[in-house]
Length: 147
Length: 172
Image 1 (tube, helix red, strand yellow):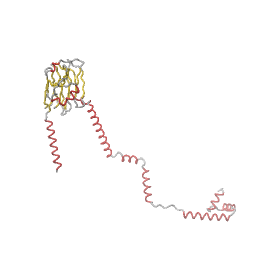
Image 2: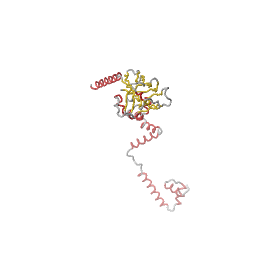
Image 3: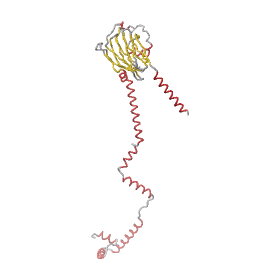
Image 4: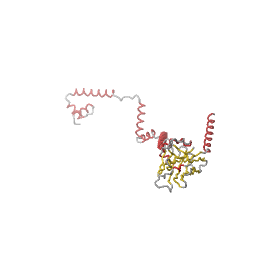
């Protein structure tokens, strides 16, 4: 008597879990970041908190400032957006991907000039960091992560 | 019969007759001693026939069973070892267990190989970054390399050789 009830409850829970996850949209944060060394570095932006150690280890700078950003909600998985600063822009074209990863076409522009184009998969498990050109004493860094 | 020993044996057995018997008994040095010896020989023969018989078997049925089994085994010498081997190792049950065990070992090996790949990060970033290229207006000696950080699995696209820009390009 108990076993069929337990089985039914488990089945309902599974259905709810799967239906919930399929409806839930995920948000992708895209940022243009300038890394520099400063005597009194400002705190790292909240979006980059999880990557602070990695960024400092990779680039060796102590300050990371966001000069352009956008947060996009992926519903159909077939969206595009733009994160831009005064001179740089990152165009992202999302193609339909699996639940585990989004397939993105990325284009980095310096004003009208295409600097870099890449096609990459972005997942919650694996953020994407791109080293851009040297800017003054610092470095332009592009960051994309699933929130 | 030529030799004396043969004729002596035949005389003891009572097989000499006629002229041959007369000639042999005439050749004997002491006929009475020979007759005595003949009687002793007959007594001994009778005694042996009476006393010495085949030993009786106590477990006749068991002996017969063993004999029949041995005859049956020897009548099909080539078939039996093969059937014994089949029955001992390649039964359906053991074949199924062997197959299942092999499958389990293969799955465990696959799991460890795939896990090692992820630890190294080599397979992940090549899957994550499908292609990358420098823009056509950018200098031709710029290069792109890809790797994945071991700690938090960040996929990194490392571009070298892009033109350095003045600091005002860091403006928001």
